[in-house]
Amino acid sequence: MDITSATAAGPPPGPGNAPDPAERQGGTTTRLGDRIFLGLSRGSGILLLAIMAAIAVFLTIRAASALSHNEGNFFTTFEWRANSTPPVFGIAVLAFGTVVSSVIAMAIAVPVAIGIALFISHYAPRKLATPLSYVIDLLAAVPSIVYGLWGALFLVPHLGGLYSWLDDYFGWTGIFAYHDGAARSLFTIGILLAIMILPIVTSVSREVFLQAPKMHEEAALALGATRWEVIRTAVLPFGRSGVISASMLGLGRALGETMAVATVLSPSFEIGTSLLDPGGGTFAQNIASSFKESGEIGKDALIASGLVLFVLTLLVNGAARLIIARRKEYTA
Amino acid sequence: MAKRIDVSGLTAYYGSHKAIEDISMTVEPRSVTAFIGPSGCGKSTFLRTLNRMHEVTPGGRVEGKVLLDDENLYGAGVDPVSVRRTVGMVFQRPNPFPTMSIYENVAAGIRLNGGRVRKAELDTIVEKSLKGANLWKEVKDRLNKPGAGLSGGQQQRLCIARAIAVEPQVLLMDEPCSALDPISTLAIEDLIGELKERFTIVIVTHNMQQAARVSDRTAFFNLAGVGQPGKLVEIDDTERIFSNPSVQATEDYISGRFG
Image (cartoon, rainbow over all chains, first blue to last red):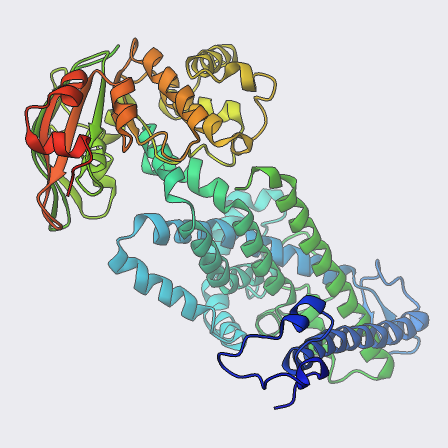
């Protein structure tokens, strides 16, 4: 093994040989291994950035070319005819469908996930908690197409009852009006996405809750707190930022979910007042459904919509970071 | 306000391990009682049986009686939550709630116990408790700042303020100064002297000078060997324990001729 010139004259390095003091003091010469490692890690960092930049440039150019051909308004048009001449397409329906289905998914999944996580971390006896958390972790590994098949073959036929009930009591709002179609609607997508993101939100929240400091729980107990009050004063505030991060992980998955949505939804380019009626679409679903039969401009248009999804995800993550940072001084 | 504690035949377990065995003692109201003894002799465990915190530990259970005046804390139908509202506790490491401000920390117990309290009333209680803990002057201008931003000694006094805000009958202190510097320790010791006018105080300490300085009565705990349950060797007036204890083991421990 060769070493740097400064130590070349000295004794060969080996176990038990202290490094040459001159080498230590100067700090300018480093061992070969260190230099190789430094080069490798620096190189991979630069390579990663370069690849990312290349992808961004590629996507932006393609998207720009599609947008320059677009006869409709990219943001407000309720149509996606990117392959006709002239091409007319807009993301209004996709953005609406993506946001609405993800919001429904979050509204259902986050409270349930927090409940399960608290049950596992603070209520269940250990004999039950261990297998339960194992099962939850397993659920996260189920491929999304399996969820999609289950959604299309089981969930859709069985939601009619729930939808009729919602229509009976909340139909007057318009949002929950239901007209006896197949339940291939945004609301069904929301429920399916909720089930899909439940495991990841649950397991991250559980880990955070388990780390809540015992001494703060004891402080609450000693003040005469019930179990729920201990959770409210010592566990939930501690886990707050972790739960937000967990939710963002889930939201990221919900926003970008493709196969399950494409399998269940019956897409259409209109925004209905009712969430229960079939129709609508999401960014990812639209890309998956239309990519194969798209021409050059059609593909570029899909790339443009994908860029919007990317920006949307960035915005959501940024917002989450802001929320977490706002009360930073209060986190131990 | 302050109540007498009467313990008889108390034995505590961690699972199948017997941690302390057959302890009986009386703690007079408005007095300070110090528990001393080597590590692992069960003095902290015993302290935690006095507000039913011991059973929070998985496998923790207790046999025997603890009477607070005439009410058995371990009687049938006694809610441990209400016991802990009457018997407050201060821990070894200062543990203010990190997500709460100084004000909210002191008010935490009241918000738990009472539910709705008027803002003005709460302000009064917070001020009174912080004054009671000799902390008011230092924090009155930053009540809305996080409690975790205070120094260790201030945090511990904040925890004392939090404990006394709910007006407990008894205040248990589990080595309250062991994580503090000498000046903060002195502040807490002075405070204990003032608090005993209002509360029955029990303090666990490893510092024998501290026991001698702050307590009226001292209890010495010891254990026969590793794995053996801890036992109460004797309890007597502090002056007597430190000058002329009736058991040889106590004198050995106090004079450093132990083990």
